[in-house]
Amino acid sequence: MIFTGLHIFSKSCISAYVLGHVGKSELAGGALSIAFVNVTGFSLISGLAMGMDGITSQAFGARNFSLMARTLHQTILILLAAFIPICIMWLNAEPILVFLGQDRKVASLAGTYTYYTIPTLLLQCFFLPTKVYLRAKKVTKPFLIGAPLAIVFHIVANGVLFWLDFGLEGVALAVAVTDFVYLFTLLVYLYTTGDISINSFDFIECFTELRSILSLAIASCLSVCLEWWFYELMIFFSGLLPHDKEAAISAMNILLQATSFIYVFPSSISMGVSARVGHELGADMPEQAKYASYVAVSCAVVTSLIALALAFVTRDLWGWVFMSDSATDSLVSAAMLVLGLCELGNCSQTVISGVIRGCARPRFVAWVNFGSFYLIGLPMALFLGFRKETGFRKEMGFVGLWEGLFVAQVACVLCMLVSLWRIDWEREATEAQELVN
Image (cartoon, rainbow, N blue to C red):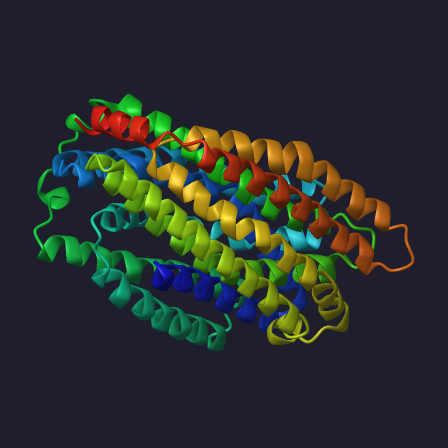
């Protein structure tokens, strides 16, 4: 799972690096587009796919492989249905961004980048469910092969398209090439191993018992989107700050690259513990599920401390790596320590969210994320961000947005810790048996 996470981070990091060398305006436009497509597309698709977690992992623990395959097929159909309205929205990205108050030049570049990201969205409709399916089956080999292979293709594709002067469009197309290579690797594995998911597809059967997977998918989508959207809204709000908008958007994009790198590790633990808890509950072993969850949270605490130290040590390096612009570098350095503090809460709450997904209860995570990020964090971010913009340093308003996120993370992790302590593992195991049988 760490390999998969590093693939996602490397892909994003390389794209941001190339955009920065195409031009400052292109980096700002690409960053705004990435925020837009994440909010309106990738977060939705990713969240819907994660609705599989509880069913597939518990079904594997109960050795109900036909249910796993059917859940995979159902999820792919759900994602393809969601793809159509998302695609229509993306084709109108530029006027939407202008309507939301973004700079016309930056919005135009963002609209172009969004248009060329549509093939990537289609590929993700197949890649994400397949990834969850293989993870639930404890399969790691195709990830170990596919992730580094995809990164090599991503570097080559970006280099060739940059050399051919494709500019902004080339960066977006390179991502699609990368995702195709990765998906192809996973599908080759399924085909060569004669997996039941390849041989048992039945279009009519996909519509039987659709209600359970659809309800979990929607709840999981909300839980993922509510947190993900908050991060992407940070880019939108940075574009509304009264000073250098391009520098603020570029700096926010660089900081999100940093937090994405750190997120690789707690998210990998989260995905692992989600599968492990589901396996144990599906096998009717509640004590083993409880033990696995506590070990995972302990690992998350250690990871959060390392993340804080890493953010402090590298606070002056991130801006320099992506582009040479003094205004952008200043904003990145000013906010980096607050980013590290955010990870103290983010690492633990991410892992506990995985535990709860393994229990097939994503609805609870959705409610916690809504309360923490939007009832507490959002008002604080706006208050601290735009109030401080009247101060003596323009960086203070930018940092204020991150301080609001820190407040949200503190509230979220406290709620998650209480929920973990109150889980009735015997009841969860009983309900898992009912779900998979």
